Image 1: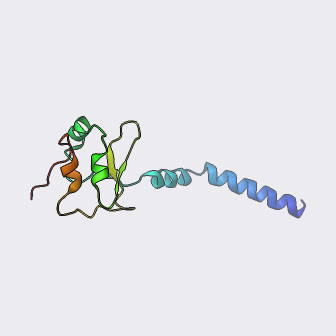
Image 2: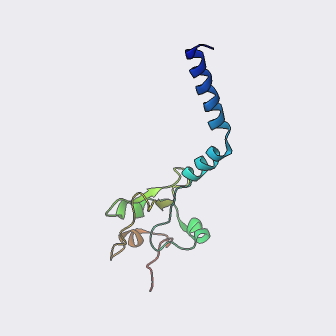
Image 3: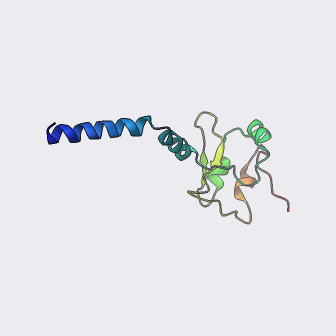
Length: 108
């Protein structure tokens, strides 16, 4: 076996092993799981999804621009706290901007 052929075979077999190895698929699945949460004051998920119309008002009101749209079709707001965390503004402009009550003032 020539040197070029040896390294080509080695790389091909190594690539096959990596692609076929179940550990790789587990790591890929883990990497796809991005932590996300609803904006402050969001109702429980089922009720939130029923009330939220996807009007983007909470997103527009966010002074630090951390509220994103999760799905362009449904347009529900989401925050990715590991990337851009919510700073929990004192006056919660996102809650005030919500016309449907899907976001409500947090009571402590």
